[in-house]
Image (tube, rainbow, N blue to C red; front, side, top):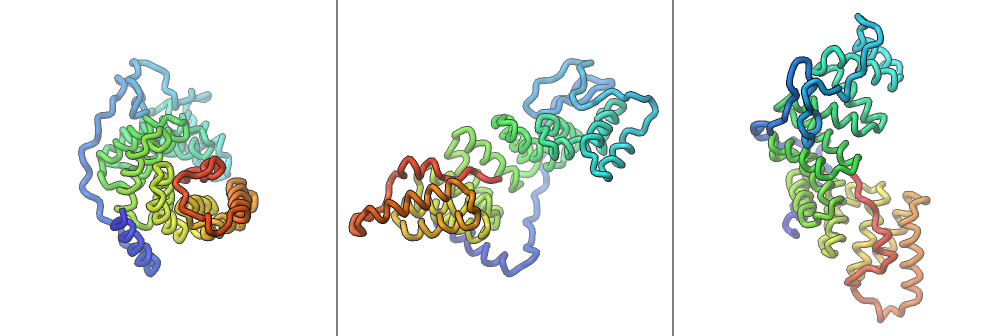
Length: 314
């Protein structure tokens, strides 16, 4: 772990000197995982990677019936989108799918606008169909995984993200998304492994560093958490939640003065950030009440400290 974070730290220093860091060349994509398709014609693909096959003739969950035959619904969708009418554009794009369930332009609009409107189920369906139509593309699978995560379908999110990794084993966001879902499911060691691999491939991925530090805190690997969260805080100087997390890690390792500074900084960045305010008040009082000679490393956090760790960020 020390070696990994030392490498990350060096890489972060290097990337600060370059406005456009080189990208790691992707490996040739692996053969795509099998995605079940509905029986034609006309038949939409089953959309979710984790979904059971649909019966032939089943209603397409993405399409809406066209109210007026011969209307260019896709053209209408584009026009309404340009005017800022997200709801109308989404409706027209779904009507376009009633004529062609595999129209990629319409699917792109449906997926993007459903995501924008936080209709996660609809967005996941649309991204999944795009993934079926684009067997070499990892992007729709990762997007689908994120939408499934938002639906708290964490097992489905892992499945979709791993399908993306079948296409590109070093896809950073797919790895990161697997880690987020594993963390939500309580698979702590799996999440740590996923985040460590993410940081190994992308040392400047600040949120992955934060989430790795968060996972280390959950595993009571507090020294490792300090290392990861210090790098995350340096990369995200304006992210109050990251500085709060760092404060928790510092407090657990007995570095209370530094912890108080981190908590105070988090509160300064976001005055309404309740967790940071709780931590500042609690730790300041504890430091006043306890004689300096009694200060020692904290093996376990107090209940307040545990409850005041920040939530994971994407």
